[in-house]
Length: 295
Image (cartoon, rainbow, N blue to C red; front, side, top):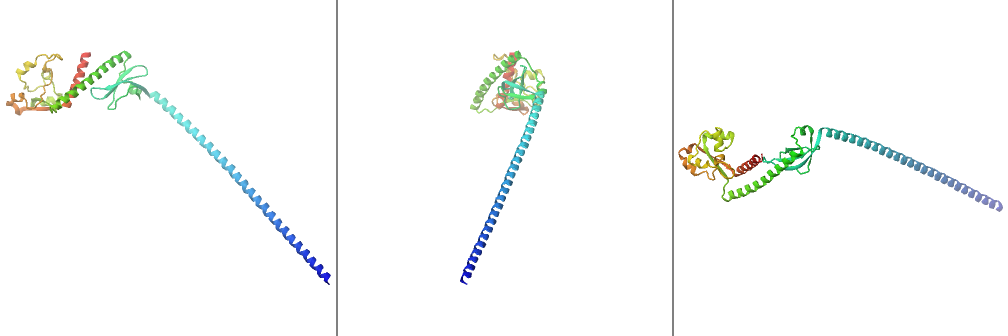
Protein backbone atom coordinates (compact mmCIF):
# COMPACT_ATOMS: atom_id res chain seq x y z
CA UNK A 1 0.00 0.00 0.00
CA UNK A 2 2.81 2.32 0.86
CA UNK A 3 4.49 1.49 -2.43
CA UNK A 4 1.33 2.46 -4.32
CA UNK A 5 1.21 5.78 -2.51
CA UNK A 6 4.87 6.47 -3.27
CA UNK A 7 4.35 5.56 -6.89
CA UNK A 8 1.29 7.79 -7.00
CA UNK A 9 3.28 10.66 -5.50
CA UNK A 10 6.09 10.12 -7.99
CA UNK A 11 3.60 10.04 -10.89
CA UNK A 12 1.97 13.22 -9.57
CA UNK A 13 5.33 14.92 -9.33
CA UNK A 14 6.16 13.81 -12.83
CA UNK A 15 2.77 15.11 -14.09
CA UNK A 16 3.31 18.40 -12.30
CA UNK A 17 6.83 18.77 -13.76
CA UNK A 18 5.62 17.86 -17.21
CA UNK A 19 2.72 20.34 -16.92
CA UNK A 20 5.09 23.02 -15.62
CA UNK A 21 7.53 22.38 -18.45
CA UNK A 22 4.73 22.51 -20.98
CA UNK A 23 3.49 25.81 -19.54
CA UNK A 24 7.01 27.24 -19.58
CA UNK A 25 7.52 26.06 -23.14
CA UNK A 26 4.18 27.56 -24.12
CA UNK A 27 5.03 30.87 -22.44
CA UNK A 28 8.48 30.86 -24.10
CA UNK A 29 6.87 30.13 -27.43
CA UNK A 30 4.38 32.97 -26.91
CA UNK A 31 7.23 35.28 -25.82
CA UNK A 32 9.24 34.36 -28.89
CA UNK A 33 6.16 34.88 -31.03
CA UNK A 34 5.64 38.33 -29.47
CA UNK A 35 9.31 39.16 -30.02
CA UNK A 36 9.08 38.07 -33.65
CA UNK A 37 5.90 40.12 -34.07
CA UNK A 38 7.53 43.14 -32.38
CA UNK A 39 10.62 42.85 -34.59
CA UNK A 40 8.43 42.52 -37.63
CA UNK A 41 6.49 45.63 -36.62
CA UNK A 42 9.72 47.51 -35.96
CA UNK A 43 11.08 46.46 -39.34
CA UNK A 44 7.82 47.48 -40.95
CA UNK A 45 7.95 50.89 -39.22
CA UNK A 46 11.60 51.29 -40.19
CA UNK A 47 10.75 50.41 -43.78
CA UNK A 48 7.91 52.93 -43.77
CA UNK A 49 10.23 55.58 -42.34
CA UNK A 50 12.80 54.83 -45.05
CA UNK A 51 10.11 54.98 -47.69
CA UNK A 52 8.78 58.29 -46.30
CA UNK A 53 12.36 59.65 -46.13
CA UNK A 54 12.97 58.63 -49.72
CA UNK A 55 9.64 60.12 -50.76
CA UNK A 56 10.43 63.34 -48.86
CA UNK A 57 13.87 63.50 -50.45
CA UNK A 58 12.32 62.99 -53.87
CA UNK A 59 9.76 65.69 -53.09
CA UNK A 60 12.49 68.10 -52.01
CA UNK A 61 14.56 67.33 -55.07
CA UNK A 62 11.53 67.89 -57.27
CA UNK A 63 10.73 71.15 -55.48
CA UNK A 64 14.34 72.29 -55.90
CA UNK A 65 14.25 71.31 -59.56
CA UNK A 66 11.03 73.26 -60.04
CA UNK A 67 12.55 76.23 -58.17
CA UNK A 68 15.64 76.09 -60.40
CA UNK A 69 13.44 75.96 -63.46
CA UNK A 70 11.42 78.97 -62.23
CA UNK A 71 14.63 80.86 -61.43
CA UNK A 72 16.06 80.03 -64.84
CA UNK A 73 12.84 81.17 -66.52
CA UNK A 74 12.75 84.36 -64.43
CA UNK A 75 16.44 85.04 -65.11
CA UNK A 76 15.95 84.44 -68.80
CA UNK A 77 12.88 86.70 -68.84
CA UNK A 78 14.70 89.38 -66.86
CA UNK A 79 17.65 89.24 -69.23
CA UNK A 80 15.31 89.38 -72.19
CA UNK A 81 13.62 92.47 -70.79
CA UNK A 82 16.97 94.05 -69.92
CA UNK A 83 18.25 93.37 -73.43
CA UNK A 84 15.04 94.79 -74.89
CA UNK A 85 15.22 97.87 -72.64
CA UNK A 86 18.88 98.30 -73.51
CA UNK A 87 18.09 98.02 -77.22
CA UNK A 88 15.30 100.59 -76.90
CA UNK A 89 17.49 102.82 -74.75
CA UNK A 90 20.30 102.68 -77.33
CA UNK A 91 17.75 103.36 -80.05
CA UNK A 92 16.09 106.39 -78.44
CA UNK A 93 18.62 107.75 -75.93
CA UNK A 94 22.22 108.88 -75.90
CA UNK A 95 24.85 109.63 -73.26
CA UNK A 96 26.46 113.07 -73.25
CA UNK A 97 29.37 114.13 -71.04
CA UNK A 98 29.79 117.46 -69.24
CA UNK A 99 33.17 118.97 -70.20
CA UNK A 100 32.66 122.42 -68.64
CA UNK A 101 30.19 123.88 -66.13
CA UNK A 102 29.46 127.30 -64.69
CA UNK A 103 26.57 129.60 -63.74
CA UNK A 104 25.14 131.99 -66.33
CA UNK A 105 24.23 135.64 -65.90
CA UNK A 106 20.64 134.53 -65.18
CA UNK A 107 21.99 132.44 -62.25
CA UNK A 108 21.01 129.22 -64.00
CA UNK A 109 23.54 126.35 -64.12
CA UNK A 110 25.00 125.98 -67.60
CA UNK A 111 27.43 123.56 -69.21
CA UNK A 112 29.20 122.56 -72.38
CA UNK A 113 28.47 118.91 -73.18
CA UNK A 114 30.21 116.51 -75.54
CA UNK A 115 28.62 113.95 -77.82
CA UNK A 116 30.09 110.58 -78.89
CA UNK A 117 30.88 112.02 -82.33
CA UNK A 118 33.08 114.73 -80.72
CA UNK A 119 30.63 117.58 -81.25
CA UNK A 120 29.64 120.04 -78.51
CA UNK A 121 26.59 121.99 -77.33
CA UNK A 122 25.80 124.53 -74.61
CA UNK A 123 22.86 123.70 -72.31
CA UNK A 124 21.20 124.95 -69.10
CA UNK A 125 19.45 123.49 -66.07
CA UNK A 126 16.70 125.12 -63.96
CA UNK A 127 18.52 124.83 -60.62
CA UNK A 128 20.95 121.96 -59.88
CA UNK A 129 24.52 122.63 -61.03
CA UNK A 130 26.32 120.31 -63.43
CA UNK A 131 29.45 118.32 -62.53
CA UNK A 132 32.54 117.95 -64.67
CA UNK A 133 32.63 114.49 -66.34
CA UNK A 134 28.97 113.96 -65.37
CA UNK A 135 27.25 111.55 -67.76
CA UNK A 136 23.71 112.48 -68.73
CA UNK A 137 21.36 110.06 -70.44
CA UNK A 138 18.87 111.96 -72.56
CA UNK A 139 16.50 111.41 -75.48
CA UNK A 140 18.09 111.63 -78.93
CA UNK A 141 15.01 113.46 -80.18
CA UNK A 142 15.79 116.28 -77.75
CA UNK A 143 19.56 116.16 -78.32
CA UNK A 144 19.18 116.43 -82.09
CA UNK A 145 17.41 119.78 -81.67
CA UNK A 146 20.41 121.34 -79.91
CA UNK A 147 22.93 123.54 -81.69
CA UNK A 148 25.98 121.29 -82.02
CA UNK A 149 29.37 122.68 -83.05
CA UNK A 150 32.85 121.32 -83.80
CA UNK A 151 36.07 121.22 -81.74
CA UNK A 152 37.35 124.58 -83.04
CA UNK A 153 34.14 126.39 -82.09
CA UNK A 154 34.14 124.56 -78.75
CA UNK A 155 37.62 125.86 -77.91
CA UNK A 156 36.54 129.41 -78.75
CA UNK A 157 33.35 129.14 -76.67
CA UNK A 158 35.27 127.52 -73.81
CA UNK A 159 37.82 130.32 -73.81
CA UNK A 160 35.06 132.93 -73.80
CA UNK A 161 33.12 131.17 -71.02
CA UNK A 162 36.23 130.97 -68.87
CA UNK A 163 36.81 134.68 -69.38
CA UNK A 164 33.18 135.41 -68.50
CA UNK A 165 33.39 133.22 -65.38
CA UNK A 166 36.59 134.95 -64.31
CA UNK A 167 34.97 138.32 -64.93
CA UNK A 168 31.91 137.17 -63.00
CA UNK A 169 34.03 136.23 -59.98
CA UNK A 170 35.80 139.58 -60.15
CA UNK A 171 32.48 141.40 -60.40
CA UNK A 172 31.03 139.42 -57.48
CA UNK A 173 34.02 140.41 -55.38
CA UNK A 174 33.60 144.06 -56.40
CA UNK A 175 29.88 143.87 -55.62
CA UNK A 176 30.63 142.33 -52.24
CA UNK A 177 32.99 145.20 -51.45
CA UNK A 178 30.43 147.66 -52.84
CA UNK A 179 27.66 146.23 -50.64
CA UNK A 180 29.92 146.37 -47.61
CA UNK A 181 30.62 150.00 -48.43
CA UNK A 182 26.92 150.79 -48.81
CA UNK A 183 26.19 148.91 -45.58
CA UNK A 184 28.75 151.02 -43.73
CA UNK A 185 26.58 154.06 -44.54
CA UNK A 186 23.33 152.16 -43.84
CA UNK A 187 22.34 152.57 -47.51
CA UNK A 188 19.73 149.97 -48.46
CA UNK A 189 18.22 151.67 -51.52
CA UNK A 190 19.19 153.87 -54.44
CA UNK A 191 16.59 156.29 -55.78
CA UNK A 192 15.45 157.45 -59.22
CA UNK A 193 13.38 160.59 -59.58
CA UNK A 194 11.03 161.21 -62.52
CA UNK A 195 7.75 162.84 -63.51
CA UNK A 196 4.62 160.83 -62.82
CA UNK A 197 3.75 160.97 -66.53
CA UNK A 198 6.77 158.73 -67.21
CA UNK A 199 5.75 155.95 -64.83
CA UNK A 200 3.67 153.98 -67.34
CA UNK A 201 6.56 153.83 -69.84
CA UNK A 202 8.98 152.84 -67.07
CA UNK A 203 6.72 150.00 -65.99
CA UNK A 204 6.50 148.85 -69.62
CA UNK A 205 10.13 149.25 -70.70
CA UNK A 206 12.13 149.58 -67.47
CA UNK A 207 14.47 152.34 -66.41
CA UNK A 208 16.44 153.72 -69.35
CA UNK A 209 19.23 156.24 -69.72
CA UNK A 210 18.41 159.84 -70.59
CA UNK A 211 19.75 159.44 -74.14
CA UNK A 212 17.95 156.15 -74.77
CA UNK A 213 14.63 157.48 -73.48
CA UNK A 214 14.83 160.55 -75.72
CA UNK A 215 15.88 158.62 -78.83
CA UNK A 216 13.00 156.18 -78.43
CA UNK A 217 10.35 158.69 -77.31
CA UNK A 218 9.95 157.00 -73.93
CA UNK A 219 9.96 160.23 -71.93
CA UNK A 220 6.57 161.92 -71.61
CA UNK A 221 7.78 164.72 -69.37
CA UNK A 222 11.46 165.63 -68.91
CA UNK A 223 12.35 167.21 -65.55
CA UNK A 224 16.12 167.29 -66.18
CA UNK A 225 18.15 170.39 -65.27
CA UNK A 226 19.60 171.73 -68.51
CA UNK A 227 22.63 173.28 -66.80
CA UNK A 228 23.52 169.96 -65.23
CA UNK A 229 22.77 168.15 -68.51
CA UNK A 230 25.42 170.18 -70.32
CA UNK A 231 28.07 168.97 -67.89
CA UNK A 232 26.85 165.37 -68.23
CA UNK A 233 27.26 165.45 -72.00
CA UNK A 234 31.01 165.15 -71.65
CA UNK A 235 32.56 161.73 -72.35
CA UNK A 236 33.72 159.85 -69.26
CA UNK A 237 37.16 158.14 -69.56
CA UNK A 238 36.29 154.57 -68.45
CA UNK A 239 33.78 153.32 -71.04
CA UNK A 240 33.91 156.40 -73.31
CA UNK A 241 30.29 157.29 -72.76
CA UNK A 242 28.50 160.37 -71.51
CA UNK A 243 26.69 160.29 -68.19
CA UNK A 244 23.44 160.55 -70.16
CA UNK A 245 24.07 156.97 -71.31
CA UNK A 246 23.45 155.80 -67.72
CA UNK A 247 20.35 155.85 -65.49
CA UNK A 248 20.74 158.62 -62.85
CA UNK A 249 20.34 157.40 -59.26
CA UNK A 250 20.48 159.12 -55.87
CA UNK A 251 21.67 157.93 -52.47
CA UNK A 252 19.06 160.07 -50.70
CA UNK A 253 15.45 160.64 -51.82
CA UNK A 254 15.63 164.14 -50.35
CA UNK A 255 18.20 165.59 -52.73
CA UNK A 256 19.10 168.91 -54.31
CA UNK A 257 17.28 168.04 -57.54
CA UNK A 258 14.06 167.61 -55.60
CA UNK A 259 14.59 171.08 -54.13
CA UNK A 260 15.27 172.55 -57.58
CA UNK A 261 11.97 171.08 -58.84
CA UNK A 262 10.02 172.03 -55.71
CA UNK A 263 7.49 173.87 -57.84
CA UNK A 264 6.28 170.54 -59.34
CA UNK A 265 6.89 168.24 -56.37
CA UNK A 266 3.28 167.05 -56.44
CA UNK A 267 3.96 165.57 -59.89
CA UNK A 268 7.28 163.94 -59.02
CA UNK A 269 7.62 160.29 -58.02
CA UNK A 270 10.68 158.62 -56.49
CA UNK A 271 11.45 154.97 -57.24
CA UNK A 272 13.44 153.06 -54.60
CA UNK A 273 15.79 150.36 -55.96
CA UNK A 274 17.15 147.74 -53.55
CA UNK A 275 20.94 147.42 -53.69
CA UNK A 276 20.53 143.70 -54.50
CA UNK A 277 18.72 144.74 -57.67
CA UNK A 278 21.55 147.13 -58.45
CA UNK A 279 24.11 144.34 -58.00
CA UNK A 280 22.27 142.04 -60.40
CA UNK A 281 21.94 144.86 -62.94
CA UNK A 282 25.63 145.68 -62.75
CA UNK A 283 26.49 142.02 -63.21
CA UNK A 284 24.38 141.85 -66.38
CA UNK A 285 25.84 145.13 -67.67
CA UNK A 286 29.44 144.03 -67.15
CA UNK A 287 28.85 140.73 -68.93
CA UNK A 288 27.02 142.43 -71.82
CA UNK A 289 29.88 144.90 -72.17
CA UNK A 290 32.36 142.02 -72.17
CA UNK A 291 30.54 140.29 -75.02
CA UNK A 292 30.27 143.55 -76.94
CA UNK A 293 33.99 144.14 -76.64
CA UNK A 294 34.89 140.55 -77.51
CA UNK A 295 32.97 140.57 -80.79
